[in-house]
Image 1 (cartoon, rainbow, N blue to C red):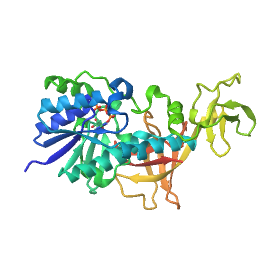
Image 2: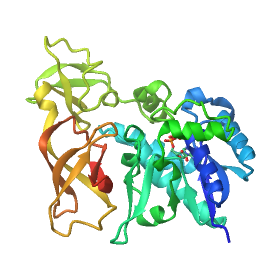
Image 3: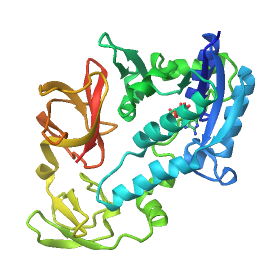
Image 4: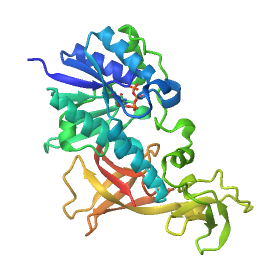
Length: 358
Ligand SMILES: Nc1ncnc2c1ncn2[C@@H]1O[C@H](COP(=O)(O)OP(=O)(O)OP(=O)(O)O)[C@@H](O)[C@H]1O
């Protein structure tokens, strides 16, 4: 009997081609668009990057019709609100810089969608992510870099569980973006030339602070910019406007470039320093999800660590601390290690694991 796969269709070219390739490989394919954020009738592709609005649904439906596969829209707004929006707002209010795509992947795209897909008799779910899933000789599942380094999305997928990986297909990871567009064009899929989506789909114009002010129960108040000795340098607009490493928009005339080096929610202070103060050669992370290995078992390990989505990765040694957190010592100091962001460890292009920077 044909294996059944639910493909998460965002109306973009990548997930459309994922559905198309799986159909051609002989799977019984079902297309699903998750409604996760905006109201259906108030949202356009331009506004939200095409992840869940009416035009995304129309595009996905048209592709499903062209491919001759069943297509459904499922409501995941509650799951998205709780696991992504509430977390995003709370992290900023605590002076951290969250990565909502990682939370969305683990808890909404995988936990919620996989659960519902299994309930309707599917064997797998699939997405149009630029990453490849493999099973290692030790039996564990891991995620390997996409063949297209520029599109690689492994960083945002480090938090998937072994069970989730064992039930997932990512057929796009073997292709370059222009190959994906070519496949779409050859098969007559109307989304072949569609623009790529923005980084965070639910924040219009990248205005995080404005979004948080609309979502949070109370608006963050103005407070002091201080130097590392506590000397007051000026007034800030509220801690949610800042992230570690930030230089622009500080409105501080110090006569030389200054940067945010820390955020102190307990005293409502933003700490300011000079270029050198933004560099550090170590970090500690919590809630580590191991992927290629099942833990360090008291050993140290040399890996490549990425400290943000756009970071190219830097060599470091990791070791587990008695409280279960993991320490990461870099060979070279790194710029703007930011609490709340993920650190993801790689070995031979495979995700070893990752956690949240403290
Ligand atoms: N609202 C949604 N409903 C169903 N699946 C989704 C949705 N949003 C994203 N996905 C799935 O997650 C994958 C990665 O999402 P991302 O936002 O990075 O899109 P993308 O790389 O622009 O891909 P696409 O071209 O398919 O939009 C998509 O390819 C799709 O499979």
